[in-house]
Every structure is written in structure tokens, then in C-alpha cells.
Image (tube, rainbow, N blue to C red):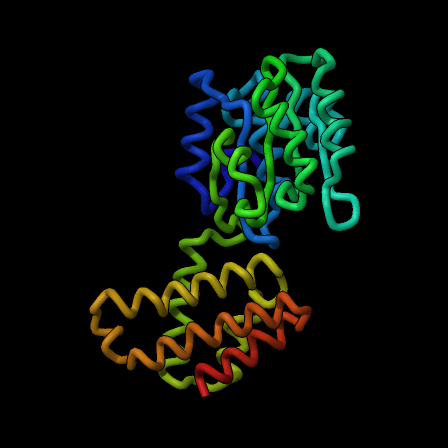
Length: 270
């Protein structure tokens, strides 16, 4: 997949592409997103867009650099990942030593997965690189909750929030959520509700995006003043949003996605 083909994040991708093509790549980025998002895949597509000589800002997918990144053996791309529950100081030190080595190509790039799990000591060590990065270096921090990072790191990075970019665009998921909300309001039989969410239940990313979209659908009904919104009591909408949050917490605790979604359909639709 090329960088421009990522759905649900079109404005962000356009901004990053423009920065690459205009030679304005920052030395450090934070991409924040839900656990179900494949943030590493997004980062790798971004790296291909930076390094690709055939389609700068896009990533052709077939040049040597793109192919090596796809196969996980690009010499100048460094990965840092958590050992156990956190990223330790030693892992950051190892990355720093590697960044000091002259790249085979034009620049070294490091992807720090689960950056918000860095210990305080590791974060303090990373600051040294953020303050004085080796020439051409790009650091990409992937985070589920950037509030776990110290302010001095946040202030030295360009920060972006990633949206869902699964098989269906976020706009498409909003449309699906709206249709299901209508079914629930109309009190359609449970088997029809179950059929409507059958594909969604199969994928964690789809499930999370659906819950986000359904919650947004109900919240929008509170403020848009539409004819459809007037079909709901405010207390009913508040209750539905609370039930969606409850389903989200159930899934986070390990409850099966299918069970949580089916139960949600019953509780909202009766």
C-alpha cells in the first residue's frame, strides 16, 4: 500500500507528504492512536514515503528501499520495542549508539514502538537525542497515550493523532453506525441487528472503529437539532453512550468482541 492510500487519515497524510516533498521533514514525530491501530504499519509507510527515490512522499512499493522496509531488513531503519511491560534505558542507549553510525543511505530513522511505556530514565536519555539529533535522523514515537510521556519530550516532537485506517474508511464506518442506530431505534428483530454487525465482530480494529462511530452518532444527535434527533430523549442517548463505553471496557478486559457487541445490540435495541 502507498502512503496516499491510507484511509481515514487523508488530511494528515497530505500534510506529511507535502512536508516530505518540500524538504521539511522534522527530526521527531509522535503518532498517537488506539491499541488496535497498526501504528507500526503507518510508520513504515511514512518511512517509505521519506526514503523512496521513485515516488518521494508516496513510496512506490517496488524500489529497493521500499522492498527492504517491507521485508524488515532496511539497514538504516532501527526498531525499539518494549521488553516485558516497558522500554528500558538500555534499549534507548543501544538505539543512540546505532544512530551515531553513518547511515548506508541518506539518513537513519528509528521507530520507537509503545513509546509511552518508556521508563522515566529511558525518557530522560531520549531527550539528549531529541535535543541534539545526529544530522538527518528521524525519530518516530508510536504511542497509545502520549500523556505518559514527559512534557520535555512532547515539546520537541511534532504530534499527530491517528484515526482508524482499516478495510472500511472512517466515513464508511460512520454510515454503517448510523444505519445500525436506525435499526435499533426502529426495534428491528435481533437477528437483523446480528447480521448487520457480523463482519464487524470478526476484526478488533473494525470493532473499535464501530464503537467510536456509534458513540459519535449518538453524541451528534444531541447537538444537531435534526428531526431524527428529536425522536430520542436525551436520557436515552446518554444511556446508549454509557452502554457503548461499557462494551468497550468489556472488550478491554478480555470479553469476546462478539459477545460484547451482541449484548450491546440487545441493551440498546431491547
